[in-house]
Length: 306
Figure 1 (cartoon, rainbow, N blue to C red):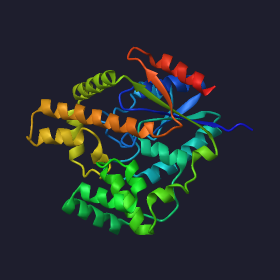
Figure 2: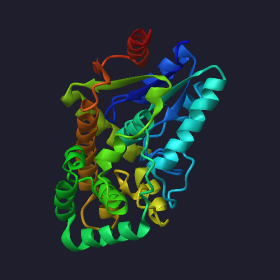
Figure 3: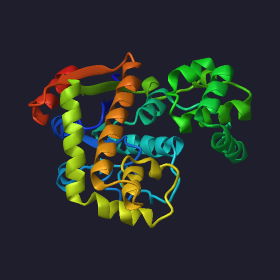
């Protein structure tokens, strides 16, 4: 009996994944599950480039705007919710189609999560104190000593994942890289397909710049001002735009500089996304041109599925 398909549409920010996913979903009778760690939050519509309402009316979307930005949210909670949605969608006779660029979320679904009890808030607080006292490089070097394999997969600037890996080691006495090999994910039970959109770098950067300009025109400043009145969680405050606009609002630089920083940091994020996905040999790359329509790209994806 053939396995049910579960499809992932990934890629760097601004490659047009949302509209391609909608076009593909209409062709294959799918419902879309967001795989974006920031779109999960309520009231962060502009800053996270949430799918517009008219697209969500065309195709049912899940796991968008369901958590208050003051609340902590993590990959384990996301996995539980996503697995539940997969079963619901398959029960309706439809195909689950994940869309988003958060590589960790995709990995934790496809490859699973290790079962060791490694959550230790006390250890985490201690590691954050070390971060404040000694800096990020100190923690990264510590991780390299304890788990060189994990350190090789984590960017030296990815503080959250560095601290998580150290927390796991100190809580269990085992390296996170070893525990991850014991995981069991979707690939065991479903026909998992991973597509990753990509385009020529200069064209991608032009899209990123245009998207940031569009955000400011759409009311990004007003949205960030409203968000800053809340006590944002450690996760939600990582959204690109929060710190950049905060600097402007605090008078540290002008609006043009805030816009420049946001464009630069988004480009850096796109590069990190590409680095992550290039490490996964299961990914089917879809190189697109700036003039390709979502329908045309969806047609190419459809051919890759059947």
